[in-house]
Amino acid sequence: MGISTPELTFHADDPILIYVWVNNRTPEEKTLLSCSMWWDWNVEVYDSQSHAVGLRREPPPKDGYTVERMMICGRNKLLRIPPHSCGPLQDMGDVTIDLRRDRDLPAGQYFVTEQNRRLPQPGLSISVVESQRATNKQVP
Image (cartoon, rainbow, N blue to C red; front, top):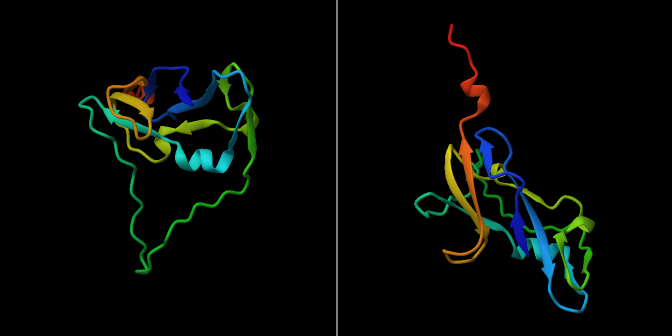
């Protein structure tokens, strides 16, 4: 499995979409189960000093109760990966990850790679720049 993106520069308040794809180099069809695949696979983001960018934390509940998170899979689909093929997991629907969904990424340089890999390794070098909307504001 791997990641790609159609752009390497993103504006500070736009989504940062990363696409997930698979590469089956074998002469046999491979299969994955969608739920276990997503639970065991994700991406990590590093800043320009190679520090991991952590996930945004949820605020504590106001009523004092803690909420335990459970993994629930509503659709455990068998994904067939043809032999000698490489491409997006199209039969699974949306195979994008929006890095903004759970991370704060101000303007800067970032490196995105598969989870649980040590640097240096293959991945995506992306830039986040100030929003065009912010720079186009007219001063009265």
